[in-house]
Image (cartoon, rainbow, N blue to C red; front, side, top):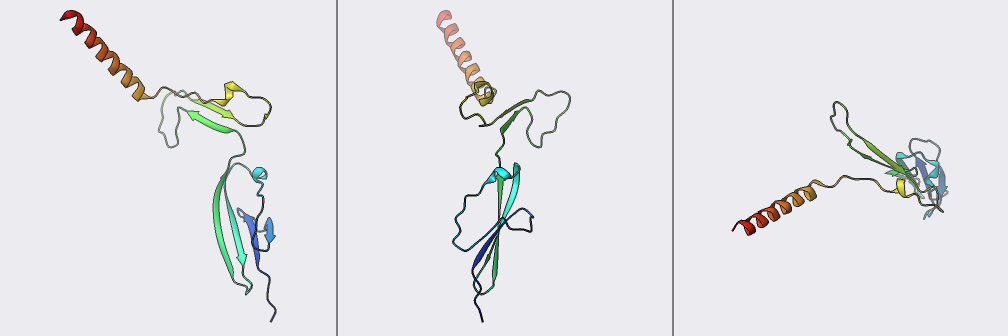
Length: 134
């Protein structure tokens, strides 16, 4: 009886052909630039020396493209009429140049800051009025 060699095969998504077959332990540089942005699954199939297989699925998300940030519309929102939407998309394609206008996502001032400011101004107005009237 001949012993079979231990192997580890790596698959991406539903591709029946492995992108790599190695003897364990496996240490690779996984290049995600060839994958489209979005959700993927790496399937690792390990075969022991006696022929038994073990399978592990590893879901992951690829985001090589520009980062996209949207203000004004969230996932699962119910909307009507006209809504203002701001879309910012920026990436790191230009290593020698820095584009300031596209690198920051404009965000509205949080409500708690407005509430604190109004409360502070109300307290200040009360203090000034009570100081001059009394």
